[in-house]
Image 1: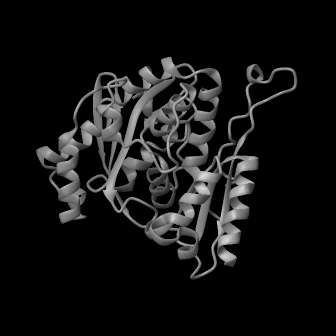
Image 2 (image 1 turned 135 degrees about the horizontal axis):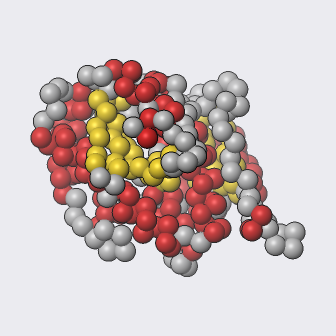
Image 3 (image 1 turned 90 degrees about the vertical axis):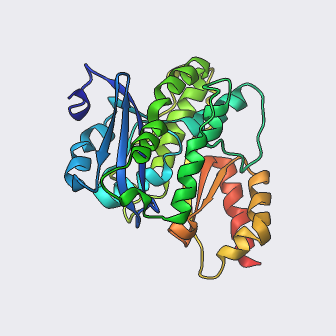
Length: 295
C-alpha cells in the first residue's frame, strides 16, 4: 500500500482523525481513521495493538503524505506519548478556516474556533448537518469508554468513518481559497500545533523543522513575521489567576494579543501555558501572563 511506504514519486493526501478515551498523553487511542479518495480505513488500536498504529508511523511522519485533520493538537499528543509518533505535514482545517476568514476580511473573537460540525454545516464547504455527532457525544458523556468496546457497532463504524468522510473534499475547497501567504502560515501553525502539547526535555530537537519563509513572500527585504511557540511554566496555584473568574482574565489577554493561548488544563500538562503567534505578540502575551501570576 502506497500509504505505508511514502515516497517523493507518489505523494498522497489523506483524511485523518483519531478516536479514544480522554484522547491525550494519558488517555487511550482506540481507532485511527484514514480517508482515501476511494476508501476509508479504520485502524483498530484495541484489536491490533500498537503494531498496527506503528506500521503507519512512516506515513504519519512523512513530508510526502499530507494529513488533513480538524484540530490536530490532542491527536498528535496521543500519538507522540503512546506510540512515539511525531505527526508531521498536517493540513489542519480548523487553522485553515481561520486563515481564510482573516484573508477575506472577517474577524473572529479569540475563542471562536470552528467546530467540525460547524465546518460541515458551513455552506461554503459542505453545507450538511451532522446530527449523529451529537448522538455520539451524548453516548460519550454517558460512557467515556464508548470507543473501547469490541466488536465495533454499526454506529461506531459509521461515526468514525463520517469524521473523515468529507475531509478531502473540504481540503480541495480550502486549497482553492488560500493565498500563498495564508498557505505558508497554515503549514507553520500546523507544525506548531502538532508539537505544542508534546513537550519534552530536548525542546523539540527531534521534531522536523518549521517551514521557512518562502522566497516569493519576501519582497524588497520585507517578509511576514514568523510564528513561534512559547511555553510558560505556571507556579502551583497560579493557574486560576491566569484564567480568572469564568475565564475573564485569559480572555482579556487574548483580546489584547494576536496570539493563540492554550492552557494545558485537565488533560495536561497542567502547569504549562502554550502561546503561538508572531514573535512580538507572543512576547506581549508572555509579559501579561507573568503579570497575572504576580498579582
